[in-house]
Image (tube, rainbow, N blue to C red; front, side, top):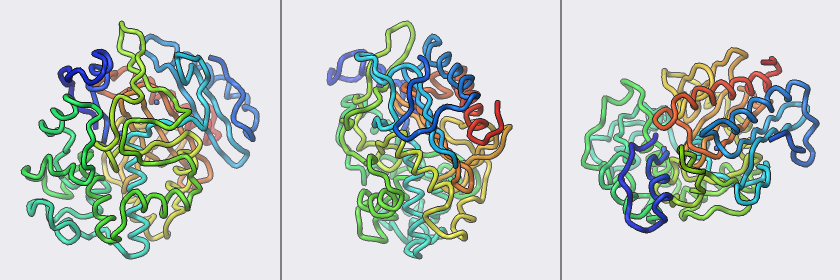
Length: 398
C-alpha cells in the first residue's frame, strides 16, 4: 500500500532522488519487438497488436521507460518488450534482468505459510496470541487466515509517523525487519478481525514471523528451502540493502515535467522485508506464479482454502474484477480468470498471473511506479493493456 507524500529528507541522496523516492513507498511492493529470450518461440500474429499497445504505453507522456511481458503456455515462451532497461545505455529489457517485485513478495510469504500449513506446522486458524505472544494482546485473536487475506485489522506500519520520519531522514536506513510491527504496537486493531477487507503491509510481516516462530528457521532460509528450490528459482532473493544484482531493469521516477530519473537503488529493502522486499527476474517470477497459482506447492485441500474468495483488490488493482484469497488474487477478465498478485514500488509496477491449473502464466513489468494515488488515469490504461495480455495468454484474442 503506498504512503502519502512525504517532505524532502535530509541530504543523504541528491535532492530530486529524495523527492522521487519518498513521494510514495509501496511496501505493501515496472520500441519495436526485439528477439525474445533463448528458446522462446516466434511471436504469434496477434502479438503485433500487443506490441503496438506497449510501444504506445511506454512512449506516452509520463509513460514508463521500459516494459517487458513474458507469456508462457503449452507451446513455449513469448517475450514482448518496449522501451529500454537503462536510459543511459538504451539496451532493451531482458527476461533475466533483476527487478524489484514489490508486493508480489506477499505471494512468496503466502507460499511459505501455506507450505507449512500443508505440513501441519501451522494451521490457518492459528492466532497471533498462540504463535507470537510478544505482539500486543489486543491483536491476539487475529488468525493466519485473516493475515493472508487482509481481513486482520492490523494497523499498517508503513503509515506510522515514526516509520515515515525514519525513511524521510534516511531512505537507505537499515531497519530490523523483525521489529517493523513495533511501529504500530501501541495501536488497536483497525476493525474486528474477519469483518472487512483492508490491504495492510503489516499482515505479511506477521505471516513471516509466524513461519519463523514455528520452524525456528529464518524467513530467508524458508524461502530458499520451500519456494526457490522447489520451483527452480535461480535469480530470486530477499536482500536487506539497497543494491540490485546486475544486470537489472532500472526503475525511474517519471514525474512530469522533469526527465526520468533513476531511482532503482534509492531505498533499502529492510523496511519492507516479507511485504515487498524480494528481487527477482521476469523469467523467475513467471516460473514462480505458474507453480504458486497452479497449486504446485501443496495439497488440493490447501489450494481450496487458498481460493476462498472475499471482496477485495490487490494494490494496485489488477486487470478485470478483483477478489482476494490467501496471498492470492482472482482477476476475472472479459476473456476468463487468472490468479496472481500485483505490486508497486518506487520505479516499478508488477503483475504476475497464471491460470488456475498453472498451465499458462504471465508477468508484466514496467519501470515506473503506477498506482491510483500517483497516476489514476495511467493505472486504468495499464489495467486495460494487462487485460489484453491476459486475453492473449488465454488464447481468446483481444
